[in-house]
Length: 175
Image (cartoon, rainbow, N blue to C red; front, side):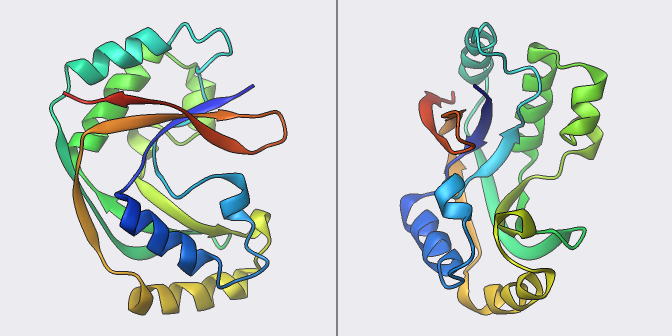
């Protein structure tokens, strides 16, 4: 069983992203996980959930913050994502990594701390699309998806169900 921590954008924007992603029938990403902004990857989030209380405490001590979702970008040719700007998000990410204490290998594996790039994934080649389809999707995304800003008032812990699918486990309020 694995976990990761994300931020769920407002429902209307999440629905807009989901509908956009479904225009490509081979895009299986919505079957894997709902649209979200990655905050803390799997490293150090152990099945015993010993980290969960530290996450709650960090969120209690964190003021609500603003996040802005904007243009498209790529991780290599395999992942298309929407860029996210938020100093508060980066600070909370750093705080969670500090409290959860993943190994240096996990930090490198999951691109955390200095390598952390806040993002909302639109599609991956490993979820059914080709690199060419990702390029086409990127062009259309700039026309079809509005930029969005919102105040982050909670984070969401996602749990993997044993089949590679992640679902909401718990929401934790911020502030």
